Length: 349
Image (cartoon, rainbow, N blue to C red; front, side):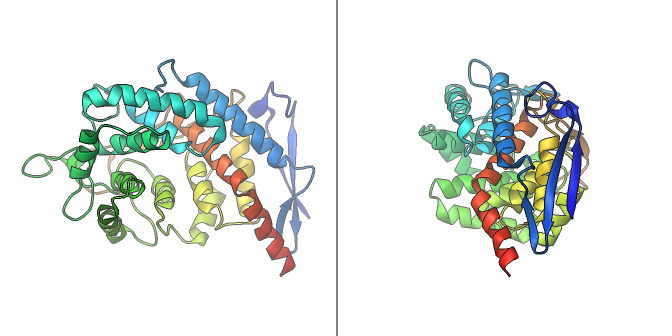
């Protein structure tokens, strides 16, 4: 039997790929699922990555920066520039974009002592950790005083706040230790060889995790924590939870988060269907629409979790969502031999 998905023509209108209506055919086999020749297959994934990468390049300014998420202090610059380059660091099509972003970061951060949401607000540990990761990736070593400032932000129990606390401790929730900020800082510590400090951060994160899920302070839903945890080597949620989430996710970046985490852990029709859904969400300009995802958590609230109060924002410029979708597709492309061998192994059982 076969499972057919009808994808609206508006998704790729004007693109040579499909003119009016595309029909994706997946062939069910007794022991798994494999793409048929009539399916869009990996050539479509390649085209989708190129389209998304071109969109991101078009949104990058001449100075190498990005703009996204218009919040009370204005558009993000430092954080989103570092985040896009960090998210897409392994996407070959994004190398030039990443180089330009790294140049912008090294030109803007040292004067401020680090990086933040934008230059109207204080520098923070999350943005700074990401920026230093990007600089390292592109062969640039940030100033020693910024590295020292970041490492001094680690609390006695191993966690990192987003903003430095006062002399007598956190004055509000943004200065408390946050799992999502700690995940990013821990990855910085791992990549820069600070093993003991990284182990303390990871132990603190483990103490907060339930069923492989690390809660987030700044993000709605568990997807961001899963995605960043995977980069850090955390166990993550069970495959059954990933499968259920893939079946129910219909928006980006959540779908992209989950696809990235599910790579190598979920095979067959679930991952294939999620791939088709992710491709179908791409717009004609190469971007992916962004659902509300970034939460400005109430300062009076100290604890991370899905029930944290605060308005959740979408990136109307579609920079963050496109970066995560491109990265997820690139990971699937890189993992193609693994996926194909997994399916083949199922068919041989």
